[in-house]
Image (tube, rainbow, N blue to C red):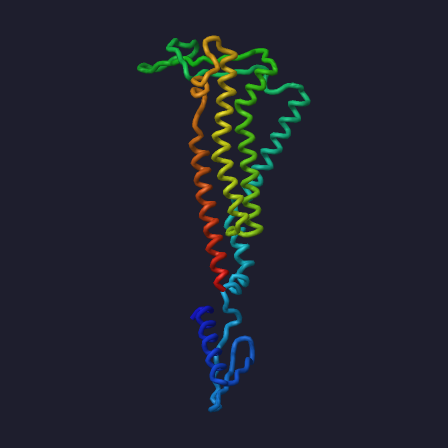
Amino acid sequence: MGALGRAARWAEANGRLYREGQQAQVLDGETLIARGSAGVALHIHRPYRFSIASIIDMTGEDSMTEDRKMLEPMTTVVSVTLRILLVLAITGLVVSVVHGSWGGSSVCIADESSSSSAMPGGFAAESGAQVDSIPRYCAEAPGAHLRILDALSSLPSSLLLISGLYLLHRFLRGAAREGVYTVRTASRLRLVGWWLLVGSLVVEFAEANARAALLAVLAKDVDFSAGTVLSMWNFPYLAALTGLGVLTFARITRQGVSMREDLEGLV
């Protein structure tokens, strides 16, 4: 019989003894001896703890250890990756400041929405295949305006990656410290989901605008328009679906927290 079953039997027997006016004596933490009017001794075994809250408290430390084990190796991988990316980003920033330049010596953009069937030199196709030409425009001596547009065409993705890893690292550290099924853990997980979902859409839209503006500056027959932006925009399916999945798990975790609070409230 489990601890809860033994506790129920002890509580029932203890209440019956006192209702009948019998004397009860606790010899140790587990055995209760009751003597009635007939002088018959009744041995009732009592568990040390018999409330759900007590059982949860007794196993709380073990649960925290299990939560930490469950979150590995994800916690370590995210922590190491975040540190490496931060070191690389800071190193690149320092090098750019020291050399007084941003990016490479030229700024280039490819117009993948248009192509030509003209055979480019140096590329030979097998029989039955053909080679298409995709125009790629480069500015040999770009100014600050072109460099900013070139940076905006890729930098937001890097910032989203680093910030997303930071939020994920914060969630994992908090879950390992406070437990998986807590309100704060569920809130941190929900923040990660919204950051991935909304951030990926905003970043892709911003980069598409930057690429379209850069192409409009370098190509004569291309204007900065909604059509050009849409041709440069790629929907972030993986990031958006991952964000939706994280939001779903955050809702499940929050529901688990509510169920745990209701269970503790019954004790």
